[in-house]
Amino acid sequence: MRTTIDLADEVLEDAKAAAFRRGVTFSEFLEEALRAYLLGVNRAACAPLHTVRGEVVQAGLDLDRVSALIVADDELSYCKSR
Image 1 (cartoon, one colour):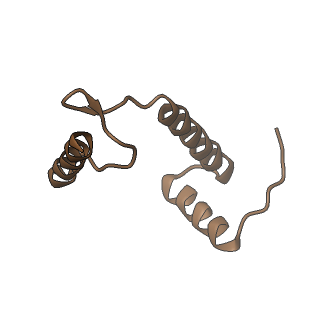
Image 2 (cartoon, rainbow, N blue to C red):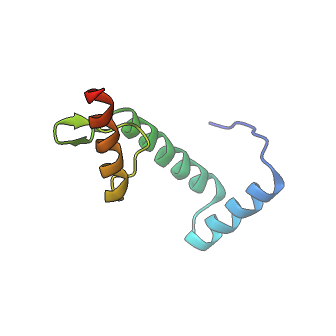
Image 3 (cartoon, one colour):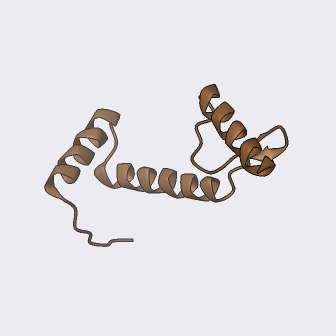
């Protein structure tokens, strides 16, 4: 299906260059990029909940940073005991 879209010049040039490097047409590149984006959006909507000691970890907490988990756990414990 044909359609018309407006892109910033810089985005257009970057996308064309990326398509060229991959050896695909601009249309193929855009279709693949859009499919990947939509798949990611659908996966994000179904993202698993992360827990620490049975408690759901707050959104946006970096699970790779142990210190952040300790602080969050301490704050939770302190707030509950008050």
